[in-house]
Length: 127
Image 1 (cartoon, rainbow, N blue to C red):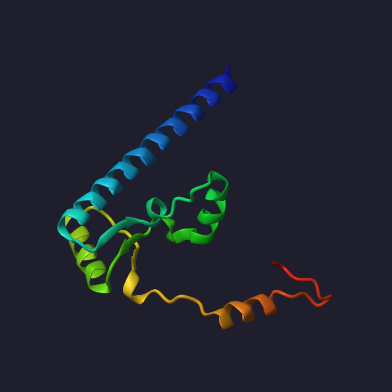
Image 2: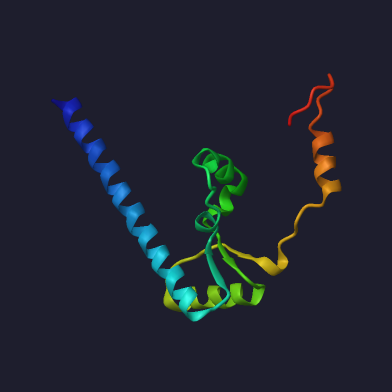
């Protein structure tokens, strides 16, 4: 009987956690919609903007984006600052912003250096 109660409690905790996450997600989406209405340079969340055509690449895109997949893409740093101020004033919460005007794209040379550093001592490569 105790194990059944523990299993039910565990399922209940899981359901509450899912409900809380869904509510947080909905709140974030509403905040992004409000930001788009107030600031024309807000593009949206990176996860929503980077949808691969073929589903088999979903994991690769998610891993490449890492922690920034939930970040909000904006055109400029100033728009990002304005959005942060708006979120504070509205007490919505926090978000990470990726301003397009300040993102640095790796050069071919830097990518090649990283590839060379990934070579092991026995000469094999991690590609």
